[in-house]
Length: 248
Image 1 (cartoon, one colour):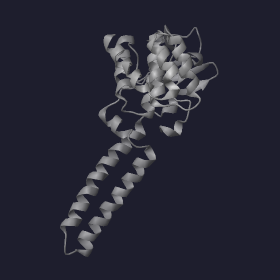
Image 2 (spheres, one colour):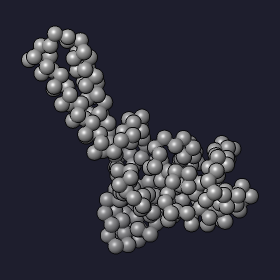
Image 3 (cartoon, rainbow, N blue to C red):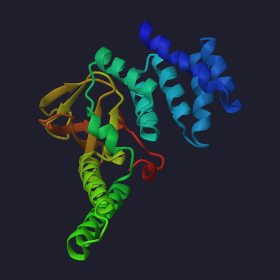
Image 4 (tube, one colour):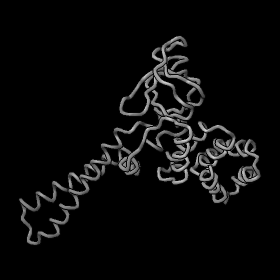
């Protein structure tokens, strides 16, 4: 708990802009409901990393860890390397026992660019490599070392952009992710209250929305097993309802 309190002190740094002053002051005074009201009023003006992080800290202080998970993840969609949000999510994962889509080092690397940008970079490296090989073996220039160096760089770039493109393609788009907002829920094997339970799920868990059917949503849990089942749509909150194009 002490570690989380220390991380939330970053709010003091995020208060330099005038728009955040009233919310930050309320947070510092322990008036978390008022701080939430002030921060929430700013969301429609445009979501920033600082605003999402501040809302996450405020929700946790109000005893709403699921909402905290939601806002910390939204902060990471805007800045995948936001260290404070990452650390707070790791803390909440351990404390709350939530399901998450674990990221590897490759996932963080892949999020540096959008999928379309990775593909453009990959094909640029590919054609650069082809051009360099053609010049070396067909034209046989007098100075070969610059071309050998260029071919080597293009080859390494081809590997790097290929890995980035492949990893980015397999990531679940933010528009398909939702956060479970209610406590004491179970994933069911059919869209009915009387259906059998597949697995219990804690508030704050991330799930992938496969299909929505009226009041029920067919979801997939994180993990290699990829367990699928049903939850009521009202218990879920979409991770990114704002401008999906910013993060896909």
